[in-house]
Length: 410
Image 1 (tube, rainbow, N blue to C red):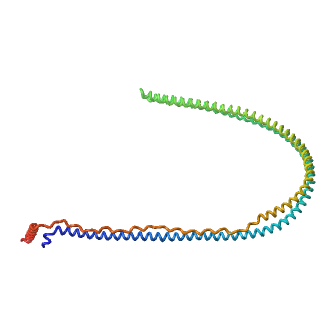
Image 2 (cartoon, rainbow, N blue to C red):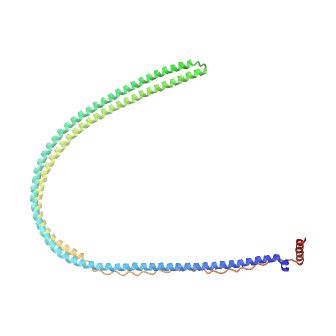
Image 3 (cartoon, rainbow, N blue to C red):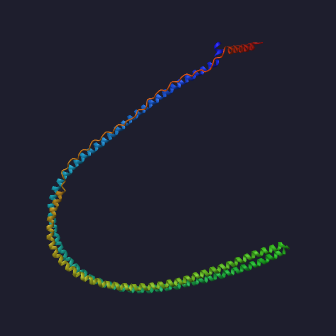
């Protein structure tokens, strides 16, 4: 009772301080545990990175070594192939010498046969020159006859083309004359139709005007109606006049086109006639030029035949000298082939130096995480609430007693 009466407020604050202190201790323990767990997690993460980096380094070191080992195997394989190639070149050299001996004998026999063929060929060439000379004379005579026929055909064709050109001109003029007549008929019909429509419109206007006046209207209304009819009639007359004017303009334009077409056709006809004459003249000049060429070719053929026969005689002399030179060359060629075979002999191969083994990849240096440091522990707060005096306690007791008495009063 005394504690309840004299220490109420201070006790409540003390309970709150104790609870806060207990909560601070729990949070301090929790944060410290989380800090240590995070530190352990970072250490584990670095350890995993080291394991992965070591595995990758081992893989790369093994890959580099495997590459070096493959290159070493290729080096030894290529060296073995070089040895095989060298042995093959020695065998090829000996075989080539034997082949050169056989080839020399065959080539010498071929040279003798070629020389005999040349002598025979010279005889045939001489006969061929004489045959071509006689054939050239016959061809020149035939070509001259062909030129005469070509010139006669050109003259006949020129006459036919002249007749065709004149007939085309006359046909075109007749066609344009018919077009001109058709245009005149169309214009006359259009004007007649317009005159008929104009007369019809005038009759209609007069009838409508009479009807309007018979309606009995007077004053401004009647005048307006008559003016409206008159305006409509005037507009129709103006449209008909414009239509006739346009028809006249179109007729004049079409007639001008016909006139220009006739003039242009006359000019083109004259050009065509000039072209026909020029073509015939060109044909004659070409025929004369070709005749001159035929005579020149035959004259050149005779000179060339005489010159070629002289060449054949000199060629026969030169062929004999060349045959002797060919035999000497065959001997030199055999000697050169023997030298080439010796030059193709491969040098004895040596094994290339071994490649340096690959170096290991250096290890990566990692920095460990900083160890956690515990902060200051929480402290309990101080109760600043003061205890009540004796008089305050007595007044509080009296107040409570009065309340109890009041509650039990009948």
